[in-house]
Length: 167
Image (cartoon, rainbow, N blue to C red; front, side):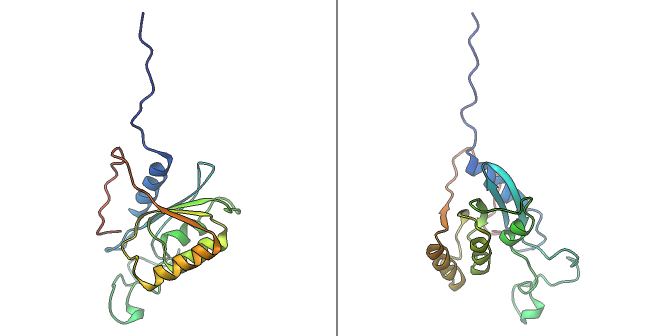
């Protein structure tokens, strides 16, 4: 009598799966310092993906990637963050009550877009800028608006390569 096979037990969780998609999306970023990806999910279906980069029609070769210097000669006035790109790239017009997975805790500008779009939960991987004012402002708005957030602690089976220096 043959023994029946059992399903594999060491598979990744849904949260790890969707975070993996967010991390993979971030690898599309041309930013030499920070690659962030985001993945919006509703009912375990991906409805939006984005990464930090320039708006459509703006050449990656014609805009600066500097972190410091005169504001207009840095990347900051030009880059669309991963969260906003995922919202704008959503395949559904209604993303209310969805969850966004993002490699880096959202800044205040992304928090506003998350709140306005009706996303109800943020799952993030890194919170390395936690003490910065824009992240304190983000938390304040998220708390007041009722958007939940939690850091994902991955199990041993979650093996996607993530360089913390790049996130």
